[in-house]
Image (cartoon, rainbow over all chains, first blue to last red; front, side, top):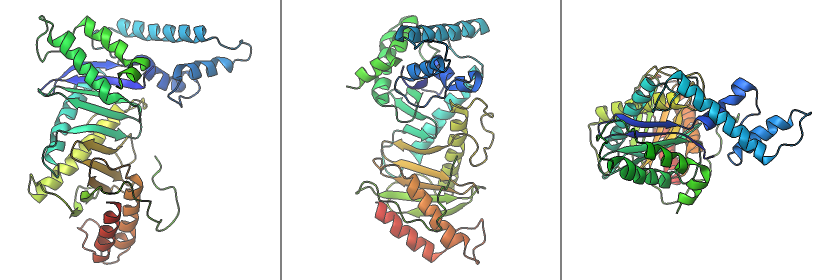
Length: 214
Length: 169
């Protein structure tokens, strides 16, 4: 599982057209708060360490098998998705629970980012600035890619996650293939393309992200 | 968030990062947005007049802090976007990079913001910014003639700062 929290796509005028949250990763980070699980510390084998530690701590259970870890993961993911569907948030794929933003907030954040990106070009000491590419904060990193027409793709990930630049370029390729070439897609409107969602989910999984770093 | 772990009065400067990176300019703001210091070493492009430039820089930092506090994925309880954050409250960014420059930022608990704009390939300047804050405390705050909230006019501070920044360039 890649250490990616969320992905945003902003159109030329600063409106949010796509927002995807990595529920399971977010839930695992907040799980220690709600479910008293051991805290997330390392990136590698995140899920294995977390669930194995949780299950091992219960002395009466035997040592956990890999298959059992995977099935726990899938069940958790399924529960998250089911809750999201039940709560009634459709394609924008966000839940209004703690740790995530509701739709209005994500729209505001996107337009704020659009403005900040533009202002950062004004403050450049030398010519030819194309805006913020990487923002490093205490608990996350934000990588941004702006395409030639002005569409911005940015991803919020754990500090130090590698290969985000190539992931963003790959997402741009997916965007041109599955969204722009779709005759029913209206330009600058929110993205509602199944194939784009499917391919994006595949791309965000950790083994794919490493392969993309070419 | 830990600001200063050591108890030294003037810690020795950290080892300079990669050589050959020039510092472009530096800003110091107080909590009210007053620009206490603006130093320029290498700035070929001036888009705005100085007052507008300072205001724009302060506004950018304020908004970016608000953005990072809101976007923090590890914090379950967040305030609303645009609400002024206290120094140290919520997640804050420490640097951002564009293709032409890298901006390193540090805010102290008293609201003093130190900004250093350098070449994009510069490494992590958090330790350097802490050292600059140490210089500020020594030469400016401890100066009995200096009134807080007014622009810094101390020669000693300017010299020490200049010397230090050139050593990390």
